[in-house]
Length: 179
Image (cartoon, rainbow, N blue to C red; front, side):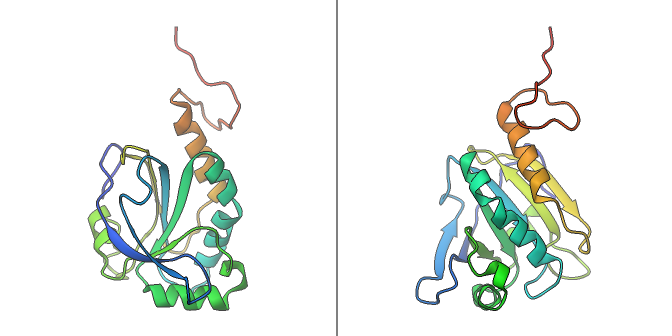
């Protein structure tokens, strides 16, 4: 699995950016959001139970990520057509403010090392990537356990200070200074 300090891999995928089939599909690659912080979060499958709770939670915090010059990018191994159908059928996903990337060939999932060998799906992984394309945070949870979107935002805040941040540090808290 790629980890802290590794370069995020190159990719080129289709993504869904709206619930309207006329303008839903766009191509995205590793250069689309160059020079921005990027938060990639992977879920195992569309039309499941834990996944929409996480996706909706990230959607609710999208403007806060944007305020930090960060882009949210949700990814699963499902097709862009499955993403569109799910957005159309699930009320909390209908107006998502960030793209849902389709890694149907499993190339990105595999290159990151997060393809679950037993289930054949993306593990529930999160990567924070800095503007230079370097992975600065990685978290992977069990397929059955959802993550905390507010904690991912807190970690982004801490990384952006470029300072030492103590346990339970929150934005605007003092950082640690070493004399």
